[in-house]
Every structure is written in C-alpha cells, then in structure tokens.
Length: 204
Image (cartoon, rainbow, N blue to C red):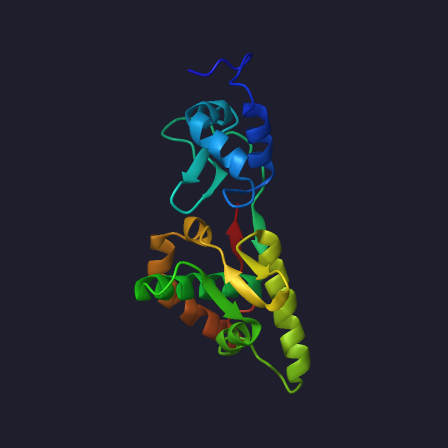
C-alpha cells in the first residue's frame, strides 16, 4: 500500500502529468518507463481522488478516468468536468473511431493516416456543404482543430494536411459505443435533415 505522506520517489511528477492529460510513451520515454515501474503506486495514489489509472502498455498511453461509485458508495465531485461537444465534433469522433475499426480489421499498418481531403469526404455525407466549398472546408478544418485539442488526432509535422488518428480514441469510445454506431450515424443523418437540431455528446 502506498504511503501517502511518503510516496514513491518521482511519483508526484507522474501524477501531475497525468492530471494534465494523456501520457504518451513516444512523447517522454523516460517518464513512461518510470510510470510502468510504479503504476501500482500511482493507481493507489490517485484512487483517493476518485480516479483510476487506465494504462495500455501495447499502445503506449496512459490517462486518468473518473471512478464511478459502486453500490451505496457516495460519489465524489469530479476533478475534471465533462465537456459538451458540438454536433460536428461528436460526428468527427464517431467517424474517426469507425474508420479506425475498419483500419484495424484490414491489418495493413499500425498508424491510421488520413488526408484532410479524406476527412472532408468522410464528413460531407453528414454535414451540409452549402454552395461555398471553400468555406465548408474551412469549417471542417476548425472542427478538426478541436479534435486535435482534445488529443484524439494530430497533424503530422511539416504535413499540416495529413492527420494521424491516435489509438487512444479506442479507449474513450469503447466497443459498446461502437456497436451503436450505425444507430448513431442514422441519428446524425436525421440531424442533417433538420429533425434533430440539438444533439450533443459528452466526454470526460
């Protein structure tokens, strides 16, 4: 059991990084290696905050999630509130997750790279483009930037129109959610037809 008044050396730096966001192996190999050696202590340390450590060693990422209360357990206030996503950003996340599942099934590579044009084509089925294609592409770019800020994709250095879908998206959008994908896409199409104008999703 971790001694909270005298924790493992260096554990504070790891916890602070985890509280700030996702820790990636490729971004800081030394920190990642240290995390692997003290992950049990980190899990115990953050549990008092109502959080648990989600670490995927094969994919090379780790982050903290809110621990849902069990039984009669009193829920703790969330350290990080849920974020409301706009319909276009929610749609992009769904389509990226769907594309990642198809990519994994093909077994061709380990990194899903898409061009901005690919993304625009993917989204255009569900979003009205209007008469000005340039403005439509600019809007899609703005939504892509929001997903970049959320940490689920990244623009390749020196190739701003090329986008890598990060595999951590699988951890946020799970198999259950994916199984409901077809229904969600139907709902998105309904949204496009104006029958549902206030659809929103939440992520932690």
